[in-house]
Image (cartoon, rainbow, N blue to C red; front, side):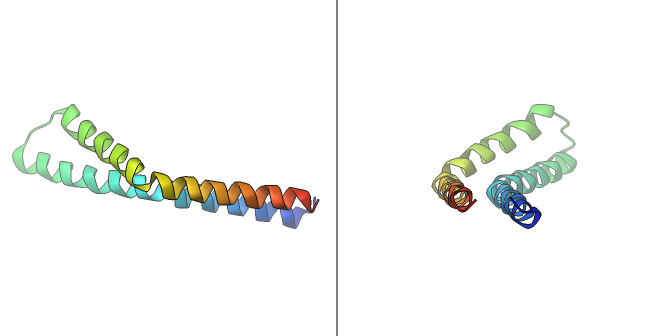
Length: 87
């Protein structure tokens, strides 16, 4: 295995991780921001108020983007096996 091939595989792995986790992270960030604005406006400082909506939103996002995420990981894995065959 050449260093260029190893770097390419690592680059594709990091790209896949970032692309796969982006929807959940973005939704969690948006919901967290909205809850923070709500808490600042109403002066409610309840910890569960910030945690529960974010976890529900992330779970719903996983359900919504699940098929796409599985396809993304499958394509990466197939590409990895095809690269291993050429070694």
